[in-house]
Image (cartoon, rainbow, N blue to C red; front, side):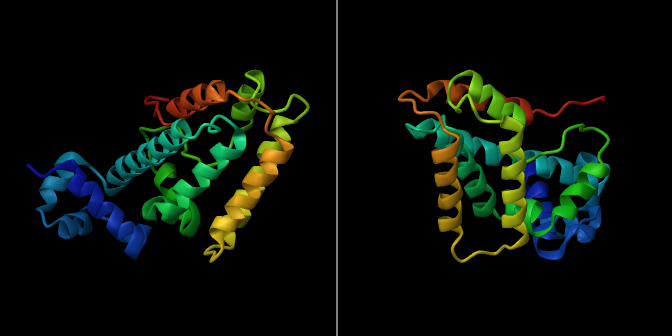
Length: 210
């Protein structure tokens, strides 16, 4: 029996190199060097395979982000979280393809999915900022929804103008602005780490039947 990871790796490779429309059960089977029946036994449609591929990538991406935040003494602050999220997207080839290069592919996968009701995101949502505010990681005078909207605009602009030779400097600059204007002046950031872990866990959990 073919390992499901082999199938998902094949789907990822096709999507990154040939585009969304090139991902079919037949092309996946060919790339994985297996019979098409083996693929269809696991995934009735190519989009089902891509949803599983997306779910795996999303979990992997946020797993790395959580690890980086946990290792960072200042990881519970919003500026550090934003840094690690952006870095995770641009450093992972599939994530970069879906969230930066070919976002229409991501939209198509989710539009054609019937078993998942969430849409993965790399943005900093207002509710996360509000939760960080409640535990003292974000300044109390900050408008969480406004900051979320500004960060969404920054992320969109960064994606639209990619690739960047100076990506590291751009990410560091955005992080510095957040640090100066949004982060609270605290010594212990562990409450923020707990908030992010809870938020990321809920965000990465698909809900079926909705």
